[in-house]
Structures are given as C-alpha cells and as structure tokens.
Amino acid sequence: MLNALFTGYMLAILSSWLKSSFDNYQLKNRSLLARSKCDHCGKKLKWFNLFPVLSYLFQRGTSTCCKKKISRNYLYIESSTFLLGCIFIFFEFSLSSILLIPFLVILVFLDEKYQEIPIWLNALILLVVSLSKENLDPIMLLNAGMIFLGLIIIYWLYRVFRKREGLGLGDIILIFSLSLYLEIPTIFLLISISAALLIVKIIFSKDYYKPHAFGSWLSGCLIGFILFQEFYEFANSVPI
Image (cartoon, rainbow, N blue to C red; front, side):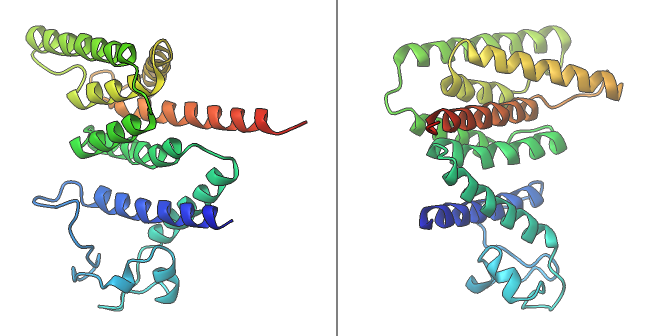
C-alpha cells in the first residue's frame, strides 16, 4: 500500500514538472531546473506551493502570492498520474515502464504541438531504457546502431535530393532508444504500425503537404505495447 502511494506521488511530482516544461517549452533562456513561478504574476513559488494535489487543495485553488485562481489542469494531471502510479504498482508494472510512460506521454504532446523532440527528453528516455537493461547485449547494441546508421543515411540522402528533412534527427535518436528497448523484429513492427496510423491520419485530415510529427506516433504506440505487455504478464501471473 505504501509503495503504491509513494510511487503515485512521485509520478504526480514528475507530471507536474513535465507540464511546466511543456507550458514553457518555447520560452527563451528557460532552464529545466528553474524555480517554478506563478502563472499570473510570475513570482517564484515557495516550497509549500510545490506539493502536487496537496498544495492545490490546501490553497483552495488560488495562488498565495496574488490570490488568483490556479488552473484546474494541474489538479487533473497530478491526481490522474497519482492514481495511475497506484494502479501500476497494483498490476506489478516494471520500474522501467513506470518511469518511461510519463516521458512518452509528454513526448506525444510536445511533438504533436511543436513537431520537435527536445534533446533533454530524448536523453531521459535513452537513460531509462539503458538502465532497464541489466546486461546490455552487444548484438542488441549493434542492431540498434545499424538501424541508427541506416536512418542517418536516409536522412542525409533525403536532404541532399529533396532539400528538406523527411525524418527529424530527434525521431532517429528516439528510434535508436526504442530499438534497445524492444529489439528486432518488434521495433520494425512498432515503426510499421506507427507509420500506418500516421498515414491514416494524413488521409483523413487531407493535409498531404503539411509536415507531420512521427515521434508522437512512435511514443503512443509504444505506450500501447507496454500496457499490453504488462497487463498480459499480470494476467498470466494470477493463479486460476
């Protein structure tokens, strides 16, 4: 019980930080480690303003500095991720899955909105994936490296002949990380499903000449893969 509550609250803190990073993504000179500020007056928040869910409830949804209403999105996001954390522990999700899912979720929204994957987010995903592999198989690393090199060549050729990017470098780094996480041939299945869903979206939206984000679809499909795998393993572990 305590493990579920602790994990849920840690995810709520992480989600609050990720939301702040998303809201301030395009601000210049914005540090990821910068102190949180009031959305209204810009004053730096005190330590007692930084507890997810609890601060909102004790402050009755208003800021302590300028007494204006705090967006309920904070309460919704933080409470939702708290409940998800508790559910993940109940269904015995692996630690790597618990850590990876929040980063994948924020990547979906960032890439869809800005069509860009921040280098820090790619680095965090690669770090979680690397730590999830207790013994990194050299063959696995070689396969991921070959996929990365092949995509870099395609990226370069497309830029040379079409004079523009077809696949972003952020997407290529993401695919490298996911290649370490899923291995071959599952990574090719993930890429194929993601590409098919993106094509369906383009057809229905009729935006044939507009650039579209691909990393968001990779991340969304991977979230589906992780949830299916974790629930499947939990179902098989339950005695009949």
